[in-house]
Image (cartoon, rainbow, N blue to C red; front, side, top):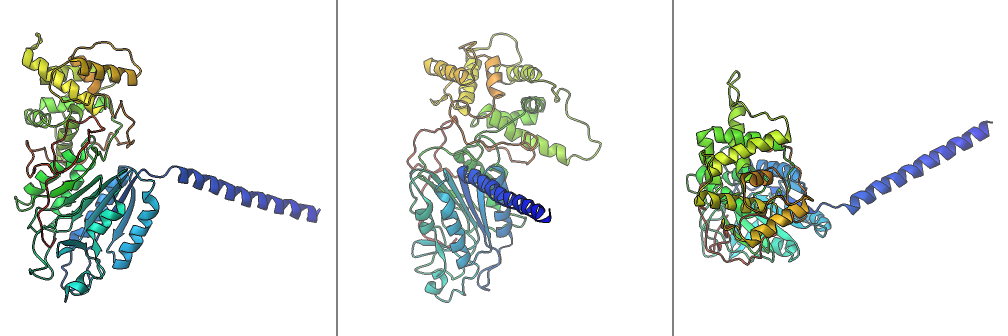
Length: 480
């Protein structure tokens, strides 16, 4: 009996052992078959060993907080803090093993950099005292090498450099203040924290001015890379009293969205619109945002400001206006119809005039573009292309076409529909309660810092208004 018992016990152990191996293999197989589609490499270097290289308090903070944001946006994030030359090599080797499966790559660097003889370098924390240029750059990382390593025609590559700090070697024939123009690879976007000939601030708060602006905007649903960088540029300039203006180069082949599809509560979206329209100052901000954004994104942006004010309000403060809590989707829809009549058609219940009708058609075209169904110019001219886009919307939502002319009810329906309808997006879920939790400054009207186009662009694959070009060239020269 004893022998029989041990034999059965051994058999159970073997089954459990091999069963667990099989289960683990199955799990690993599932994970391997579903690689992340978007990769981020985030680096922050603060603690330099050389006394000639200033300590950067915020670089590690910048990288840490941006890593957290990108993880929330469904990126596979590789983070490196205070990297030595060997640390850079190991991090990039890890990225090499993941990049083949990635549809987009984001690379962020905060720390010291230097431009020598027209070549830009990122400096590891073990960079020796810059007694000679050769010694300074021996273990440094060339930006052009990073571009060549990760750029690919078939995927989008984004490089953000918050590295324009101080000049560790002084000006000379080989080293000058300013930024060196880079060789932008195919389908690649490179953003610098400041304009040519300038040095950036590390910042007196928790983050540098550039990264502060980037963190405020990167998680706003529906912003294209172009629209996001306009906001980052304007906000950085405001934070530095005009001393620092971000600069970028682009050879993107299509538009990119950090948050492409969001899961939003229609009742909350309606409540946000109701709150905005009941506040004259917020309503004015919304009208400014509508000049360059779709309705849903504009409401989310302005709603952030209201939400931030509510959070910071002292205990016992009066609650928001009545009507902000809606019990059903139908209640939300009716509230939105009423609000949009006020916003676009006007207070009068009479038939809108030609100008208001054009505004309504333009708003519907913009929402259809947000949903991926309309790819023509948003001009307020409701013709065959607009009707075709509307048909496409109803077809992809598996609903019957109820009307082909612009109405406030139709705009309400589009406004409450989240995500991209007419083209499969990268799915990024956003917690409805968090969408309006972080403050963001309202967009300034216009695009400060915009330069003439030097990039090649293909039509956007996403329903956003045709973005202004932000691909102005970078000036020659400079330490950053």
